[in-house]
Length: 153
Image (cartoon, rainbow, N blue to C red; front, side):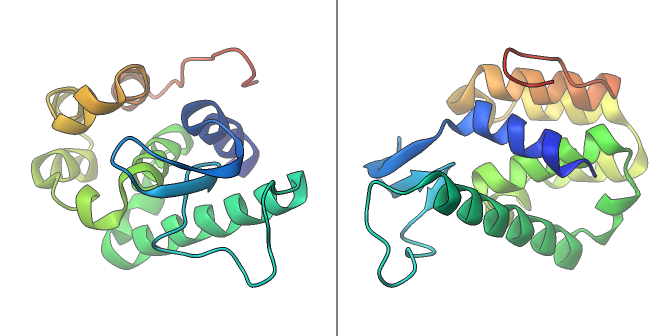
């Protein structure tokens, strides 16, 4: 999987913040969607974070999402490049436990029924919560082509 593209897509979708803020559900967050409640900042780190610290957190969070996918959905690594980034982006955003509730959508992904998977994505509460992000990811799931947005090459 192209981690450089995933990194850019997550930065676009999550935004980059150097100081802790409360996300839409009140969770303390920093960097590129880093959940400080689930994974506190390392000892001695203070805000505002540096670019290097944001990059370090993002790298760790991407690795954690991929490890969760490997553990719970081992078939994900057999998806093509774009669809791997879609499912990783979803896991990064909602966490593996919530992603696993998408039973029918995940079954469709696994079987290669990408139009059905995209329909399931679009029909979810998650899609209503994240809006354009979900529409873009559903389109990529359906077509195998990630729509290009400003700042993502």
